[in-house]
Image 1 (cartoon, one colour):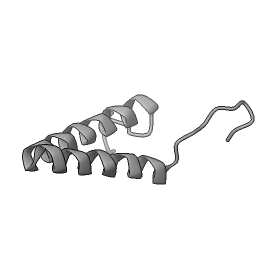
Image 2 (tube, rainbow, N blue to C red):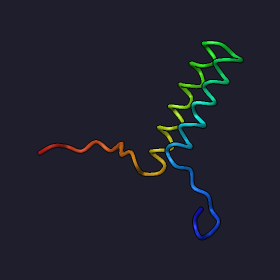
Image 3 (cartoon, helix red, strand yellow):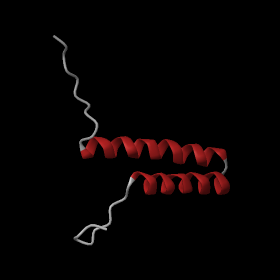
Length: 63
């Protein structure tokens, strides 16, 4: 917990939540639901990293 009472997710918690989501999708929906959740999760991760500024998409010319 942080001093402000705000709870911050770490990598282990995020991985656990993602794994559980994939497990539920695979169990209840089968392979295609598992694959759909995996692809949409990866797309969400990509968008989140770009929005957070951790992934730079600008092309820079080499001199």
